[in-house]
Length: 358
Ligand SMILES: C[S@@+](CC[C@H](N)C(=O)[O-])C[C@H]1O[C@@H](n2cnc3c(N)ncnc32)[C@H](O)[C@@H]1O
Image (cartoon, rainbow, N blue to C red; front, side, top):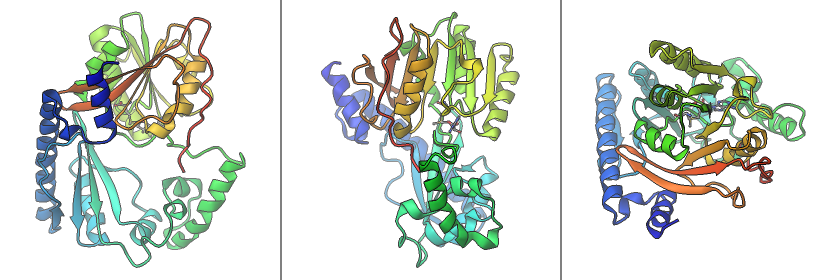
């Protein structure tokens, strides 16, 4: 790796790309800052029209490397009303907010994340002053969507989730129940501007079958199949996104070449549809990369390539697998991409099982 690439990767990992003296980095971060500012202004106007006032810290158009903004609401009530109002404008919350989730979130948390996806995903953190209970419990004890999904309690019994949570975590630790479902994180799309450079890094051609583990709306697959004539397999856990992906695949006339499977890309075995895969694509939280990558490399045929991308540093992993890492900056996108090739004779096992996240 040359020294400029090393400097860029280091800056991306430290979330200080915008401070780097590098013209391309500066242009990309300025473009992202302008985009975030426009989105924040639109959201503030939407909320004002609904009688909800929101304030923003600092200059939202300052150059940044992430498509994310923060809005301050005056109270939890306003934040929940804001999530509902923004739902009419294409924003989805990153976790359920109805039923028992609502009182738990109101009492223990002071932030909710919503996101809207177009050519990029913009995430907005909605913050409010915490209740007196909020902030007293360590984060590990605060119930989340995995607990609501494990046991469906009526809303009025929400305090019982404080008991459900440790019991669920213990049962998972003892292997009495499978680890909670969406361990590969929420939907955060790969910026459209980065798809071509990522496909180039993987050398995707017409003979390939591209498997996207956690495919979201299948944008990588749709782009690859339309531009390179390959085949595509998407694995996605969120039924809403499976529906979106299938709808868009059909709308673009690609349904004879792309299959979207509703399933768990974090399972021990890849689904049968992925068995012909020659390129595997993984954009998930950094902590989830080692276990998933290890399983893919163990099951993929020699000659297959695994592409991982992330702005965060990966946990200690794959240092002996000949991984190649490059910074990618393009239009509205910033990432660090990694390519791992499955050698003849198969991959060496990746031993670091990583932190599965609670
Ligand atoms: C960061 S997004 C990446 C989306 C897409 N690959 C892209 O790059 O645009 C991660 C995706 O993984 C999905 N996901 C999370 N956990 C999963 C699991 N256990 N199995 C399959 N998909 C999962 C999420 O719903 C989300 O769509």
